Image 1 (cartoon, rainbow, N blue to C red):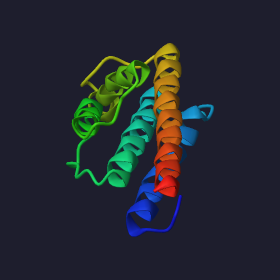
Image 2 (cartoon, helix red, strand yellow):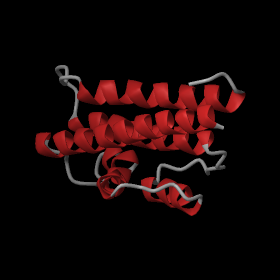
Image 3 (cartoon, one colour):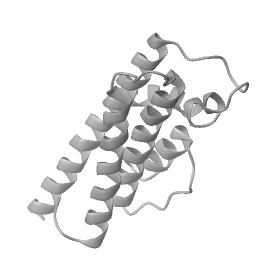
Length: 139
């Protein structure tokens, strides 16, 4: 990514997304719960989408809501692949499952799916960032 302030900030958001994704992919240490890793998966998708918002100059609210972020991007003309839309299911991992008694326990299979969705979002955002960079070079 080039050196404008906006691009540097977008890059910082994306690096944080990749950090959360790396944590979500780690094998659970003894005593850890799936819910915390699912939260990292949700955070990866959220921060990746916010990175793309920053890059496109889209102001976003401080929200965990993946659908809200996707809607903001679409309103600005960003084409969202259907597979990325599936990541809206990650929103529940931001709040409901993080607090005991608020939701059902998370299974290993649910964690695997959450990580796959977050990975899909991060890969798409990474490709979208490269595309924006190529468009700028052609200007």
